[in-house]
Image (cartoon, rainbow, N blue to C red; front, side, top):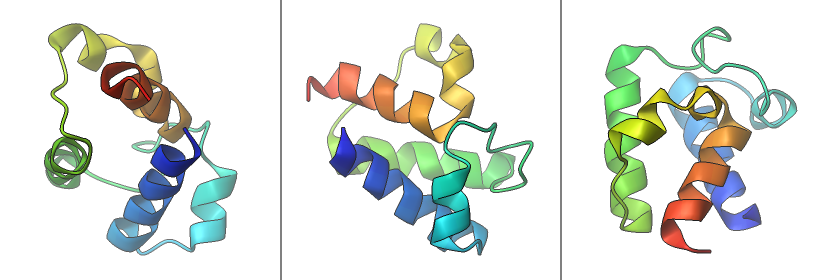
Length: 83
């Protein structure tokens, strides 16, 4: 899961303009509430994740509360990708 987490942290740092260390410190916080991304960037995030890891998310996964944190998202990706 470290590779997934690192990829997500880098993505959020690049696309939010936030320092990578700040993003790393906030992996358990809601990334919308932290202002890391908005709804438009969220769509980009989903596409980039699906391309990078060759996965597709289900509606149930979107409804999972952990989907809104970087650590939770990493766990969901790991589950889908079987890593």
